[in-house]
Length: 88
Length: 168
Length: 99
Image (cartoon, rainbow over all chains, first blue to last red; front, side, top):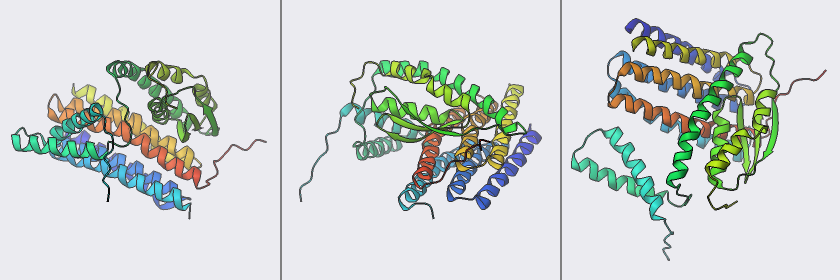
């Protein structure tokens, strides 16, 4: 099971790189915001998988909860700002 | 300087405080009385600060009907996820995106919120704009947009909120 | 139980990979948001259910399910806010060319 979880971690890291390509490349700024949103969802899963791998779920699950809530605030702030200002 | 106190419905305050307090207990996971009292004070303060937004308190039967609505929603999510997977992995990428507007017959603001959230949660359709009960929806495919226009989801949500007083 | 959790995790990973392929392949921001919502709703939920099954019955399982519920409530809000900002800022949706 440990080896299996290690493979899962590697595949998740590769998926993060795919989303990072969209963030760096994205034609409009909304593509970048969307890519960051995908990265945060992947990071939440990644943190919980790390917790299961090291047998410390009780510690990592709190970090992932905080990450989810902070991601909401950040994404909403960016969306509101761009909505009022218009696309650069 | 005149301090104006907003009108706060007690049921709303109680429900929100309980929800926040359960979240607090889950995160802190300790049952010493200092932590519990601090949690009650903090969740009461946060609930009171946020009490100006929506005075709507769902009744128990609304919660029950909502609970019976959830399995259907999950079934719908599975169905459209497989449809979307087929579309993305198809070599020719046979998508046909379309922006269309839907005028729903829902007459309660919570019902419109639930409708928009359900549409966005279902992969392949997304709510782009909400104005009272007119929604602008972006769908990736003809089958998905016809699914919204067939009004099946809307009638289920209208059944959940059928005996609330309309406010739209 | 271990087999069941492995099946759930692999199924969730499959949907995550499909969503990543969609984020690369699809043409504009509106269609890409559908791929991201596929990640959020099905991929993440299947993976988290698999991890919760692996953990067994404890307070940690409950916390994983709380994170799952948070994802289900918060992600539609983020997707809707981003798409509404894109629409109001005047991004033109991609459409299939009709010959």
